[in-house]
Amino acid sequence: MSAPLNVIFGPCGAGKTTYAHGFARREKAVAFILDDWMAQMFGPDMPEPMQYEWMLERVARCEAQIWSVAAATIAAGTSVILDIGLMRVSDRARVRQIAEATGLGLQFHFVDAPQGVRRSRVLDRNVVRGESFAIEVTPDLFEFIEGVYEPPEPDELVGAMISVSD
Image 1 (cartoon, rainbow, N blue to C red):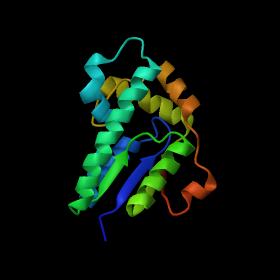
Image 2 (tube, helix red, strand yellow):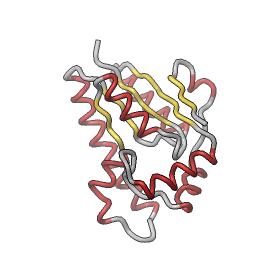
Image 3 (cartoon, rainbow, N blue to C red):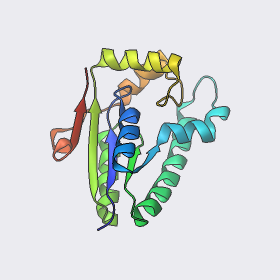
Image 4 (tube, rainbow, N blue to C red):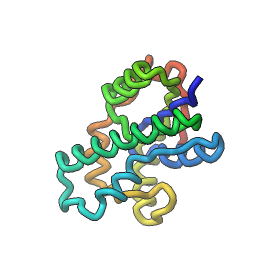
């Protein structure tokens, strides 16, 4: 049996990246954090103001490379944890289909917190710029992401690890 594929999802500021780092340390897994990849690969070239199409194209490139490296990591016997956004139900369904098609054991991890807590965390993270900081999430970007995010359907949470903070 191959090492499991652990996938984190939840709204902006819920604590997904902090969860991923902690999980990776505890379980000796490799964490793939989309925001880190985006910041390293495309941060210096990011247009002002942010252009949605520009961002989506680069997210797709990063995701493709993350999947490639994650698959090799799993094949080598090491668990991985993906923190790659998955804001929409269709994004999470796509990951489930990939896992099923490739025979990967899949464990979803849902991380959530109330909106006010999440908004405050994002503002604090922009200032502190600690371990979970990769890119600045402005209030406008936070609101945009809130509009894209689709909470999980009940069937998505069956068998998921759930972490909700307040």
